Image (cartoon, helix red, strand yellow):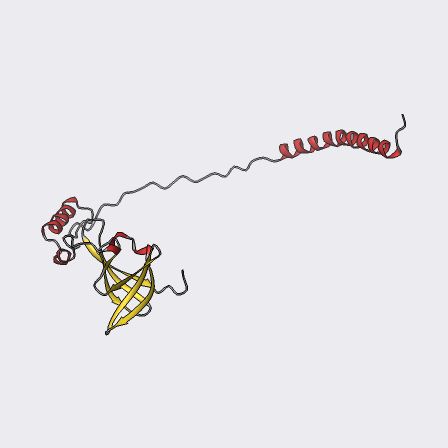
Length: 181
């Protein structure tokens, strides 16, 4: 059985690397032990916290902002005297819904406008169908009513409930979507 000089050299190289690894390992461990022993954690003393001294409310003649009776009376006044404007803002629940009131505004695309006998009309794309709407038409799921149509945008007045349950108006605008299919 003959061993080539290349395989013999590789075996010799492997043995020499293993022998070197053992010799350097002790030296490395000794160095790590020396470093660990020489490093001492630094202790930084933290000063004692200052004593808390509560301050009395010195403006007793002024209105206490945290007075429970004042807050409850404010809520009772609001409930007893509703804002007259909120009574005027309410959706027309008794009228018949229009087809475009079944879709949210963000699913509608304003794709064009027409002018017929001095009246501006808008073309809306919903579910790959085109609908023609005019000022006064209802669209969207928030009782939206079209208030203005221009060549580039469609203005809508929506009636939504706020966190307190009151009806409020908010404005929405659909911009012309050119070149979209």
